[in-house]
Length: 97
Image (tube, rainbow, N blue to C red; front, side, top):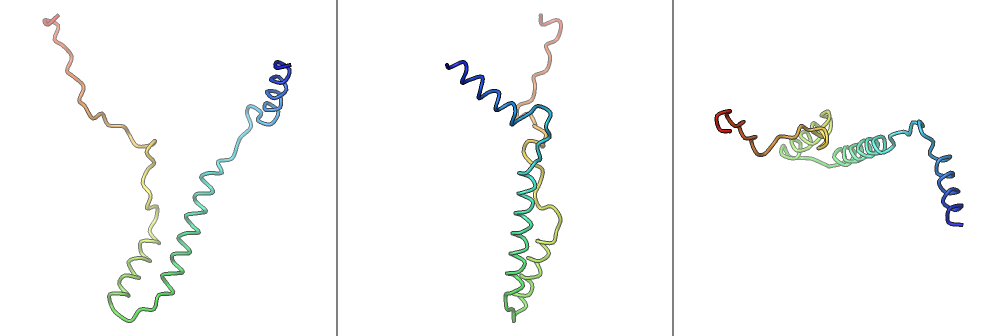
């Protein structure tokens, strides 16, 4: 009975997740949409601030410039090159054995 049950669930999983099926990268699309929505909300809140001093106007200008800049996010950790923290030892000379 255990073998029949295992075959059933493995067959069902194979039918649902077929090899070669292109699964969409929904995590990246969802995170990009969330960042865009958050930026829009913050921009609306900054525009709603009433300013009467030069310092307040300067702060609003800096915030709006920071939000309009391109990608503020650097490269992900898995794409950055890994630098060796310890230098590799020099090879031993032939005379050292």
